[in-house]
Image (cartoon, rainbow, N blue to C red):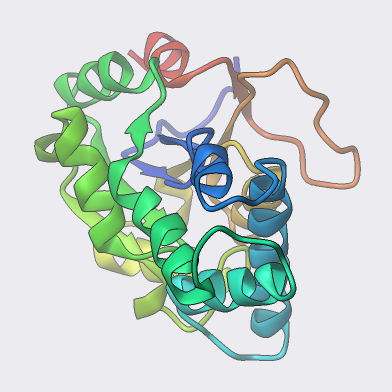
Length: 225
């Protein structure tokens, strides 16, 4: 277990870290597309967001998601009009649930006195709906988004923005994410980090090593409380 300054604020990534995005594959199947394209689409969406951030641009997640679908569906044999298919897939974000380990873990962290916030490359409204459906929205004091910062994560600006919003030093924050690129970006700014490894995967050696590796949010709560 890492030693050092205890975290005051736990900062959660949202997409895939809190939300279970596996049902998005069915959204693709519903419109006549290969369900395996869901992962291809999301990876391309992140790539394009990172590429724009590297160029100094900050585009909304929804814009990239919709246009990414338009590109992916071009020439595809869908069972409905392209715009209708895009709308159906995008609507899937509004019905996602959290992973099974999230609710108990979040409640235990909040009850311990830790401050909880989110920091997403997506929209705050999506995080709000997700947490309301899970019954844990009240555990979070703020739902932060890169739409209000200068750039997408893993650029430094969003993590620094979160620290300003929470009125703490970056070193008092613990970033929790399933994405190694998010862990690395936060570590480079000075945040503490916890990598959520639900699948037993291998962490890439070229990224900064996480301070903690946990199997879920409930496991994180057990380690911190």
